[in-house]
Amino acid sequence: MKRVVIVGGGPAGLMAAKSLLDNDVPVLLIDHFNYLGGQLVKQTHKFFGSKDQYAKYRGFEIANNLVKDIKDHPKLELMLSTHVVALYDDHLLGVYNDEGYHDIFAERIILATGASEKFLAFENNDLPGVMGAGAIQTLMNVHGVLPGQEVVMIGSGNIGLIVSYQLIQAGVKVKAIVEASDSIGGYLVHASKLRRLGVPFMMNSTITKANGSEFVESVEIINLKDQSSEIIDCDTCCIAVGLSPSIQLASMVDAEFKYVRELGGDVVITTESYESTVKGLYVCGDAAGIEEASSAMMEGAICGLHVAKSFGRSIQTELLESYESQLNELRAGPFGHKTTIGLSKLSGGAYVK
Ligand SMILES: Cc1cc2nc3c(=O)[nH]c(=O)nc-3n(C[C@H](O)[C@H](O)[C@H](O)COP(=O)(O)OP(=O)(O)OC[C@H]3O[C@@H](n4cnc5c(N)ncnc54)[C@H](O)[C@@H]3O)c2cc1C
Image 1 (tube, protein in one colour):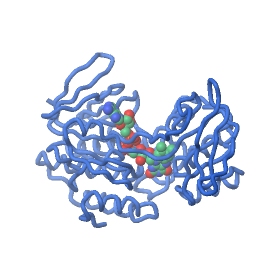
Image 2: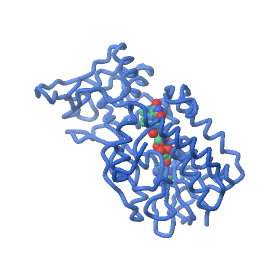
Image 3: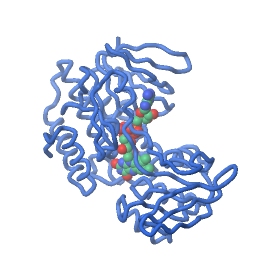
Image 4: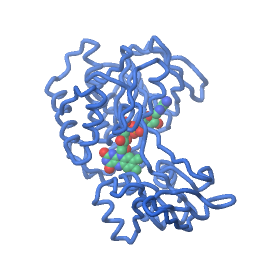
């Protein structure tokens, strides 16, 4: 029997581990990659936010710092390259790795499993060359492999904009950024940079088809206002249309959910301490609603403190308050508005900033 198992070693899981270890609670941290850091490892750009959440550092540098904070702690046990494939009643986890399948019981479980990419339905969306933005980032920034030479980006949220910029930095031509809405979804500072580099934005538009016999050779884009269409030659079509919380494990034990569009889809209902309706099962970070790495860090830190408290540890109240106020500050920014509405819907209107 383990004291606490954290599933997911991204910013939320790493900060949850830190809070627990700082309070002398043993942690087993599991991730299906062979490295820690989650999404941060792929982020080569400098982060915004405040210096408390490592603003101005690049994502992979933030990951290194978070890992450095915990990696030598004697009460930390790590299982990398390990998939948590099932969650049963009574806090039983089914895990699979090179040594095969085995069961792990835990007194408390924290799910910090992050998010998965949304996809789009269009003709030939299974042609090689149609990829999610996360896959492109992994290819380029983790493995040093270019996805193609000419990319059409679908989606102008922060991920679409940042990945477009990273593609250009890697020498790939971004032929257009296609956006269904009439306004850019991400930070205007990123969009302006791309405009200055000559990337056209096609607003009120979407993809209807990828053409090619064995791989993508062009894409068909339709203007949703006047129905005009255009074919753009390219070898890669990148889909960056949002993320959904990874809630599969929580759904296996009947944790209660609510659909909240602003938080990315189905979200696990939790208390202020991030405990789900299943006692002893906690959810934080993107898995608890799509936000950003800075908020995932704070949520993980707060969740870890609450779990430590549930074992009778006398946690530092000032630290908890400081994390909570940092999280509120992050959500007070221009992009926090959507989250605030989402959290309010999730709590039935009870959430107050
Ligand atoms: C292109 C891009 C740019 C971004 N830019 C910024 C930015 O500038 N600023 C910012 O604040 N945020 C940014 N973000 C968002 C940020 O990366 C995420 O919000 C953040 O990483 C979420 O943290 P997390 O710990 O909840 O999840 P993740 O970082 O996704 O970590 C989840 C971890 O869980 C593991 N896992 C999941 N399921 C299992 C399982 N069943 N078994 C074992 N392991 C599992 C995964 O392997 C992963 O390591 C960006 C994201 C992207 C994609």
